[in-house]
Amino acid sequence: MGCACGDKLRKTRKVKVGRFTIGGLSPVSVQSMCNTNTRDLKATVDQIRRLEEAGCEIIRVAVPDMEAAFNLGRIKRAISIPLVADIHFDWRLAVEAVRQGVDKVRINPGNIGERDRVKEVVKACKAAGVAIRVGVNAGSLKALKDNPKPRWAPEEWARQMVKEGLDEVRALERLDFRDIVVSLKADDIERTVLANAAFAAKSDIPLHLGVTEAGSSLAGTVKSALGIGLLLRQGLGDTVRVSLTEDPAMQVRAAYEILKSLGLRQYGPDLVACPTCGRCQVNVGKVIHELEDRIYSDANLREKSEGLKIAIMGCVVNGPGEARSADFGVAGGKGRGIWIEKGKQIKVIREAEWVNEVIRKIRNSK
Ligand code: SF4
Image (tube, rainbow, N blue to C red; front, top):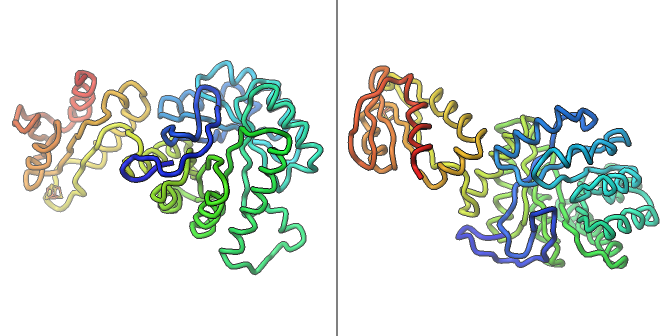
């Protein structure tokens, strides 16, 4: 939760998720979800470790059956970030997930079943100090059971989403359970923004922001950036997850780029690159992609590069000017470029050496 200047606007209640706190005055945290089979221990742990390097702070895994639930303890012991169990339909999976030591359980009020069953989940979470996320999805509202194709305006969709979220929250609070996070997701920006804003006006519960089923890399990132960004800009949101049909590492990077562009978090360097044009005689796109892959897959490099401005420019028209205003950078020529540091031209280096030189410079920077 916060505004573009980084100040907190809406103070939500604090919810502990492992070593993280969601809400209160904590920075907006970044989450992702594995796309591996949770029954496959190695694939899941490998992916989570890769996501940790990329900066993921809380990770969720699907728990479709007991075999997956029984694997959660081993996954948890092999990783360093809080683990969230994603549960649909069967409350017993949630209880087993808690027994296995997860840090948070996500339940969907639209399909978790009768209140008596939820009571068992709450009892287990309370005893273990485990938080619950009530994840309301527009596509699986209880109200759709009687009315599967409603002709609701976006405002009415939002009202229904908020109602189901609040109903569930009140049921948990009646059981004296308060470690709750809520998400209200739709697959479009309008319903997502309306529902979250309406919920925030009625509750101090931290909000997990996301646009569900956002889509492929470009379309999904644009949709998520707008939906999540509009809410963050209003000071709403405590934790974010960008849903993309993509490697989850890209979800993490997209989430940070949204937060970084609003001044809410730092993440890696400020990489400035020209769009290239007919004058360009080097492959700026390839250099930038290689640099991003190296920096964002290595937590140490990423942290060291925080706050640095690095310019990769195609030619000497704008290149020297941009590179001079950066901490360091390169202005291209034919298969080579002028290396510039703190405004001074230092040397000429071959294009094939640009990436390694930038990485070397980051490693030696602090
Ligand atoms: S810096 Fe040079 S190559 Fe890049 S867009 Fe400008 S003129 Fe074109």
